[in-house]
Length: 80
Image 1 (cartoon, rainbow, N blue to C red):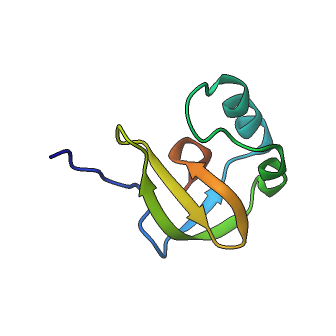
Image 2: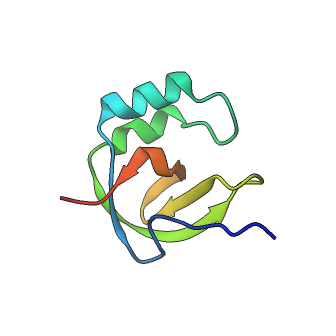
């Protein structure tokens, strides 16, 4: 069985990447769970991870407190 490992466990604080990074991800990501336009407004915010899930194939998806949508690890980083 495949082992999945998240970078940010539930309860972790994360910083959503800058708007530039999110727009680049939005343009280039062609698979599941694309960013929605309303998610771009949350660029740069520090929020808490409330749920971690895995897309078939191992991509980690995060739900963030008070922020809509699912988030890919590429769109998040540790807070400064």
